[in-house]
Image 1 (cartoon, rainbow, N blue to C red):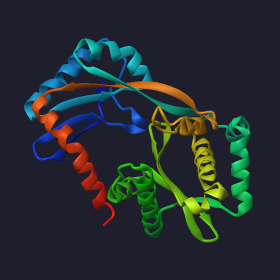
Image 2: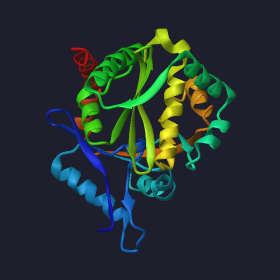
Image 3: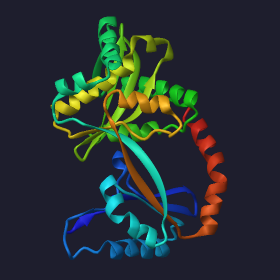
Length: 281
């Protein structure tokens, strides 16, 4: 064995299948042992051959920052369209005290306010807590105009120990929560939710600090704060107050069947609306 390629085939409607590299930590891509026997071009072509045989209409590789630099030009030469992205990464160095003092003073003040207000943060495996969190998550996504992840997916990730659920409690009531992933030496902040009426107690800051602390204690090397819309400068600034550093990476896409891809493009908006509506029932 010379490496691995985590990926999945997404079939939103019958007859439409898209191959996407697995987005763990927002970038998956190729994981190869350094060897002269490994030819990335041959690997890419083998996926394209499989795509044609299986009737996939699109191939999308999302590469790590390092792979973007080393292999990006090859994908471009092979006819792939590049899309640039960025995330924010925090190097833990296993030292939570050093990170605490590096935080912006407003972050430290917010964490202290949460503690003084009586907000407590813990991980939970309770199905009841997950149900409460998911209801809160649906309201948060609706408020922000997004598309929610299914509760069954969250449950599966928790059962398989890929994810943990951190909840903030105030006087016995869950007021915020964050489902975070733990994979490949990285903790990824994934699905966040909170009750607006309790934001004055700064539960989200308390949760972020709690997860960063846990990542240090469990020897994870990185905390990934996730991608941000480029126009959302407030969110970007918030992540950087924890001293997370903007990190660029890219995805590379090739359309195998233009007709099928056009059909998915035309129907995607409507299907997302239907899917979002279904999560509330």
